[in-house]
Image 1 (cartoon, helix red, strand yellow):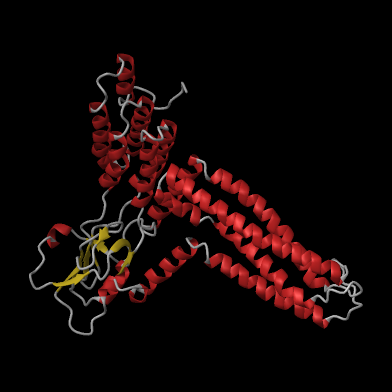
Image 2: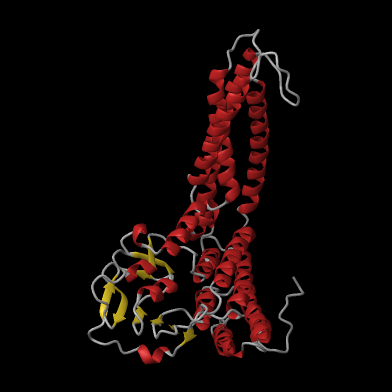
Length: 439
């Protein structure tokens, strides 16, 4: 993957939209431009009015007072920008240290923070740009439209600052962090539901053997596989061509490693199939629902570490994992092999299965619980809930869920009191209510 210029337009559009939401510069810069344009418009309106015009619903004061007001507002806005940036950086540090470095992206993506910073900068630029249009003389009237808009922008910005502080305080709560990650993971998995139209599933066992003369396309850079445009692959190959993706979404690939194998090999002038795979410097949740599980598990592992020792946070994470897996396990994943009516075949043998999603959610958590009986109980309750949830319509997931439950029981510390051992074993049976009514 050489860079963004080599992506298909679908990947480029999705990547730009995603990066826009993760930028602390783009949205504030856009709002700053709005402030500049607004200053230009209101200045021209005031210049077109005669000095003795009395507009309704506008502020009237001397130019001297207006100069003082605008200077004060501009100074306050640029000072507050520094304070808000400082609060944002502190929140990022707290999130990284308390939860996981992976969850920092949730705070950077926060729209309210971006908009408040943008409002502050826009108000500052607006006040600075209309100041030259104010004479500063005590006997001259101030430009009414420009001054009124400046006061309104100031009031809106102050309200935004208060909302930002309240939002930031709530955003640092672990429950809210886990909720945001879970919600994004659910949206991601819902976007990937099923197979594309006009394509049928094929057995990938027929494509395990790749001909020796197959064309091998290496990865052009190292990074995380964040998107794969299957439609672009089908569009770019000739009828009867087979393409095998040698990585998966969410995997890290090194430059030079095989990315795609194509047979029969396309001739010269064929489209660059590497455009259909985006390799990014950072992992993203564009098509990677497993990244949501990774972030939640990271928070849980950090909570169970001796340095933090916060089992209640680990329990919250386990419950959120259950919410996410309810969607994952009932959503049909795209088949590993797809074929179109012209005989084109695209195979992705390394895509995660439902069973692997289950393993990723519970393997590390159950190995890190130690003798935290309440965390173990939460794991068993969530597994019981998932078993009950999928038993009727998706019984194929039962073995993986029951395996996790049995592994937890097999790893229970032998020195636990007999009463605790009996309670935990009862939670794995189908004769005990999995809900915790005693706490």
